[in-house]
Length: 459
Image (cartoon, one colour):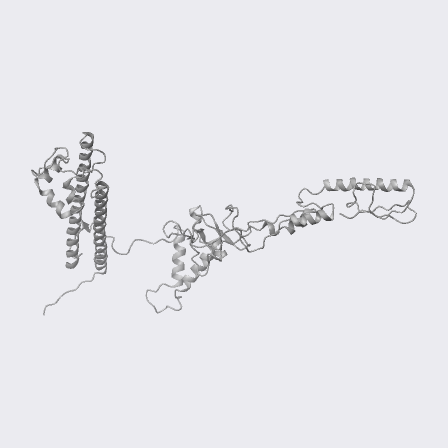
């Protein structure tokens, strides 16, 4: 605010200048005043009071957005300068700071410069350094220094692209889900990228992520699709260059093939050229002679026998699981009858053969094993050397038994693993048989179409 000055015209000797913001509310002006009559002094005093009222009114009508209004004295100005906090230096990170909200995937350009009109605009520009977000963010624990940043979808922290070795264009176009190095575990949490356009050199994402299935394409645009087809067709020879060649697909033939099938919904791949004969196989064996060689027949025979043996193993493993369930049921009956407590072990001695296939198979052939599976439950052991209550005979009666701790869950888990491994081995053998049958069928059909034959002349 400019310093108002009031000239006392009634003074005969000299003019009087007064600083309105520095005058105390008293009759003493603090400046040189010439000796005059009482009217002149009254005019000066009235002018001083009027000036103080204007100054107070101006201070009350100051800009409400201005954080530091203009002080009314040099001393107040000095105090205000001392009380103002020093702006933080750019590029340094504070130890604590508020967490950023994930407003967008890309951090660059997220902050908008607030434009203001009026006297507060200069004060806002001067305090731009105070509005810098000092973090800490990223693996460097630095501030938001206006470099490009990306947010982690797991911990929701922000990271500089330079610190995580990620380019801005790739991060904004190709990153589908970003996971920072601290959260990456290689199994569930890892950075996922979008598929790029199939045109060589294009880094834009393919149109595989649109909502409409009709608009999906392995190219980013139709122009790149046309460019790719042009490049592929140019690799074929022309008719002029292949006049003397036999059975050569030329550019003109290929374009004509595409045009002729456009009206029929486009060009589609047909069935396999060979290996489509119906009724050639019955129960895995050929119905016609000459399909399999002697080695292939021996392989299929041995593989089928091995798969049958694996199937029998799985049947035994399932009987093991039944025996474990029956032993646990017998323990529960002993607890209900008051023979055992919940802390009693209850492990049955007949479970020693579980998970050992050959020993379990031998036990199944014993009278006790046959009687057990015929009755569908585990009764009192037939061994005459065992004594005690029939309800608990052959069972471990210790409380909190360490050797048999958690025997039910452990045995069940071991048997399930054996079943899974055996089923996987059987499936692999079946797949190998299917591959051999397909190869044999394709070979047999090709020989039939070519009508090739070999006649052996003994002579």
